[in-house]
Amino acid sequence: MRTTKLVVALLALSFATAPAALAAIPPAPVLISPSGTIFNPDPTYTWNASTGATEYTLQVFNGGGVLVIQRVWTAAAACNGSTCARSTGSVLALGYYTWKVKAKNSQGGTQGFRILPQ
Image 1 (spheres, rainbow, N blue to C red):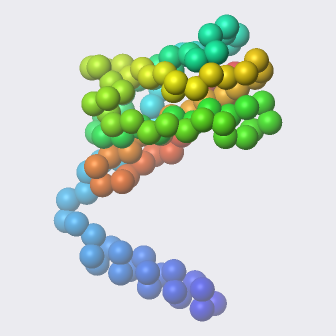
Image 2: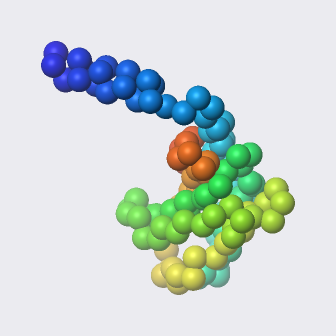
């Protein structure tokens, strides 16, 4: 029971000291490519820009679900208009991979990752 009271007290404190105007949390980016079978060991990852995002985190996982690549870029470095595209500069070995991207705003708000459907 003490843990519950402590959590409630911390939440109340965070709301009491939060800035008056919070930026809207950017939606999870819509992933475009790559998908399916590809033959480029260093593909360009492409996704739609998220409104209000100032930073993107890309993660690539191997077939066993182990994180093998993580990169973070500012929206200015990753996006041109409504589309974002980046290569990680890391060569992938032959195999099965999944990838996801998370958008974050200037206040650290994030919606979480969206994974490209298989």
